Length: 330
Image (cartoon, rainbow, N blue to C red; front, side):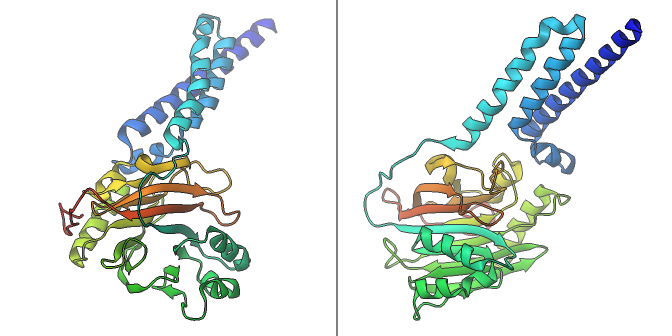
């Protein structure tokens, strides 16, 4: 009986060690290979927090295997490394705005379908009180009485169908540009503080969420469709890309633009899921004519995604213009 117990214990330990090694290899492959292929994009979604259960499995497994007991420290290192890597990747200290001059505040929020409690969503937008509020989905929200009272009778909510724009600022143009293959783009031009003469030009984006669709293919189709419709130059590209911050496809999607969060973010970066955010799926890309001096991700208390709030100014040290088309997108 004792021999059987020993064998069972060692088999259980071996299973735990093998599981820990498999999890570690899967996470490393996801980090290194990202979403370059369909099979690796599944691995790229493994967060570094997975190193905590990986380390626990290693600790328990090595405790059951006398030959590996001296290697227990590997488990402890993994348990500590998981949250540290996650924190370094996803948190920035508060950055007070340093840029002088007028600025325009923008909120971007991915809502999807909102069928109930639209007043709660409206309240979150009103509390943010941005100059320009952009929401994806949530058609019922834009017609909420609270939103209409907030905007005033002379400023009705605007919409392309999937994107809604709530603002009291003069909107020069809002039109749907692409609605194909689950890829949606809309062009928005708006005047506001710092953009009185030349409007701020935005490209609003919503990309497919289907986890079985190859992200590299989506990025290629995005670029091809954008080139096909011959869009005018833009200053900001924002929306729900359904790609993580470490995505190789995301790096290729907007050449010539920089990501707002790494340069100007403060607080917690992930936007999904709202209650326990692990992934940053909503992104903002910045062109050479403007600067995003601050960007924060906040919990509005409702919805599946967190809300982004940013401050945008004309870039003072550049006269660069944004070019459109493949290779200068930008």
